[in-house]
Image (cartoon, rainbow, N blue to C red; front, top):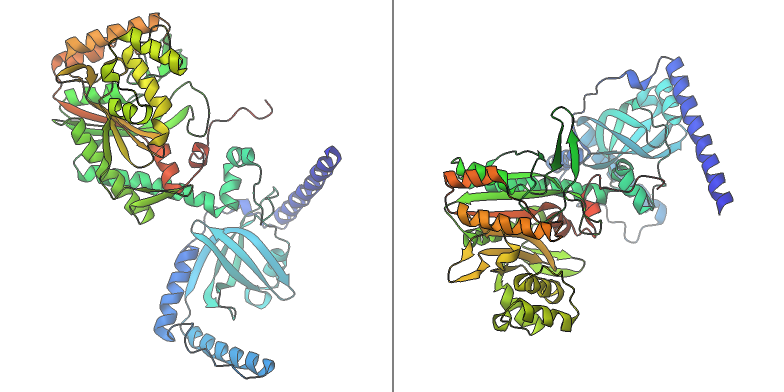
Length: 536
């Protein structure tokens, strides 16, 4: 195997040398493609096809209709009849040709003497190019024949349909815009090495239309969200990434040092506390879509750098956030997939129906058969956890144990869109208490496919209560909780100025993209996911 790999490396190096030599010959002949600074691209591949079909229907009608009836004919006569009909239609179309100018990467070439075919891939897809020596000139044709797969061309010519029915471009000019000096993967297999796909995403995007479509859809998801929220009066804002106190979530931050101020800073783990400051300042509806950073492990649903969206709306609560979320998810699915039913790995999830709503206590009772309303205190909860084999920390309380039971027994069952409400206060330090039950808070998480998709609160706006919650978080940190939050005096000062009743929510954008594109791992929806350095 080592000998085969060594031989393959030698072959590739030889092929690369040939390409470098070709570039040098072009440069010496005054045809250096890298001196070209622009190209007049008038159409993309899909636009050429749509334009031609529309013009064709106006001139000769439906291409599929009116074909000669060759039933009962000899084979030679049948071919002749088809060719004559094709030539008649072609002549009719040639009376009003559609001239276009496209540009893209050549991924296929078939040379046949005085005429050749190649395929060019641009942003919107592939289109076939017919390259004839008499049409582009002898010198240009000679240069084209020496070109390589991966070279980028500008093509001017007119659209036509081949006898096999493929809409193509009859080239009248072929301009080499960039010389590819590397060897692309073999056409039919693409990048088979998954790690290489992530490290060299640019090659993956060239070779895999399916991969490119994932990121086109991701962009559409984000633009759909923005349009949806903008129409509801939300304002998009930006808040700091480098912070002294990274609050708003239970996670370990990345740390750095700012030389100019000689201060240690951290990368944000959440968007929450700064956005709430804006609510205090009177900006009643705000949202931010941005990167956050959590010093955690890597798996199919976690990347240390990911995209989070948080929004806050004054004068509403977590019920308002549920209504907004249900409407928005349904709208995104319809806009991006064309249906309110999405399929992920063969499992259908229906966003068209009202989302189920269930409390965390009722969910644990339903799937674990344990009613935490009957659990008297932390000691009894810990004894039950030991009995069931659920690991916990010494500083955990009854509420923490309830959350652990939920994770163990419930999450995997929540396939259809489900709001899980009313969490224990111990795991919700920024959330309003539930009236009538101070052990719980007005919080929900939405689940689909067994995944947490968003997390929302009726936001705590009592500065005295918030200070007490922060003090408990500080105590948890002293007891060994590395993900505990810390007291943020400036945020408390903002609450003392006064924050109106507010509903807030955070959405994991990458998981949403995974579901909407049927992608198996978070790395498949991140253009450049975090990877171990090559060679380590």
